[in-house]
Amino acid sequence: MIKSIINQFIIKITPFLPRWIVWKIAGRYVAGETITKSLEVVRQLNEKGFSATVDILGEHTKSEAEADEITRDYLKIYDKIFQQGLDCNISIKPSHIGLDISNEILQRNLDKLLSKAEETHNFLRIDMESSVITDVTISLFKRCYEKYQKVGTVFQAYLYRTQTDLEDLSQNGSFNFRLCKGIYKEPPAIAIQRRRKINSNFIKLLRFAFEKGIYVGIATHDLELLESAYALIRELNISADKFEFQVLYGVPMSGWLEKHLKNNFKVRVYVPFGKDWYAYSIRRLKENPNIAGYILKDLFRR
Ligand SMILES: Cc1cc2nc3c(=O)[nH]c(=O)nc-3n(C[C@H](O)[C@H](O)[C@H](O)COP(=O)(O)OP(=O)(O)OC[C@H]3O[C@@H](n4cnc5c(N)ncnc54)[C@H](O)[C@@H]3O)c2cc1C
Picture 1 (tube, rainbow, N blue to C red):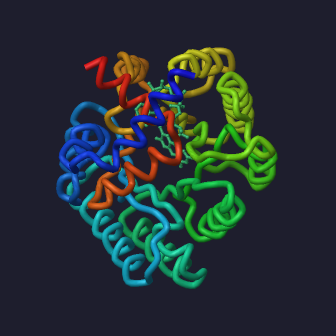
Picture 2 (picture 1 turned 120 degrees about the horizontal axis):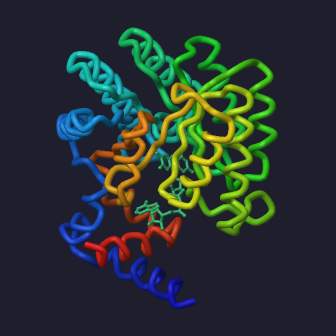
């Protein structure tokens, strides 16, 4: 109850705070506004032993020109990653590169990204947005996978449908996906609401993936969940080349990242950047009030 009031209070006041104050809070989780700055952060992460994936902040692009510009920026990023020899791929949101405008624009931009990924020997991750577009995203992933296998998508443990989706996809063999809890506010009819139940579904899905030999990006900051993932890896004796851990840039992990590296487990840091950081931070805060709580907790911890 008190937690919810505090979260709501932060959400209400944030839009009235000066940009620089919001940056003080959000800046910890965002790698600057430019490609150069974000790749500098990637280079520093690589030097510490972490892989990375970059994401240009933003979603629900409304104009073709803007969707094309975002696509061009991602193409540039692929080139720069290649030229600079960075250990980094990219994560894109379908609604950022044209989904809300037209299918034709989306497919055209996605095809450009796939070709560039292939040319630069890189990987493309299609992030999962809200449940309204889960079907579309899975279809896009399948279509991309037919053309180029170094592509992956994301599944959310809070959705009841995820088990079936994974079973369907696994019928055609192995693939690569990121498993996360899910960040969007979804109704109880389609999504598990309680943290404990989401966590147990997460582990059930992870077990399924491991048993099928599917490559998983285990994306969570939940330390209890990480303990359970470790237990599962031990129980099933899963080889370290069948999974990686993934975290969002800037989220404190109480020594777990170093622990992963010590165990020779790959860790990939999701590095968001871009000029849309302000609108994005505010939108995300409104969408999921728990983020307000994380920020507050983090500020006090510091
Ligand atoms: C690499 C990566 C990629 C993701 N991609 C997607 C995606 O494509 N689609 C999607 O729906 N969701 C995505 N997510 C978000 C995910 O679904 C969860 O909403 C988010 O990670 C919080 O869940 P959690 O597993 O960390 O557990 P929680 O129980 O929510 O959090 C555990 C603890 O982690 C800390 N924490 C968690 N998130 C944050 C944060 N944002 N800022 C500060 N502290 C935090 C808090 O201390 C919290 O107590 C991604 C997450 C990661 C790590």
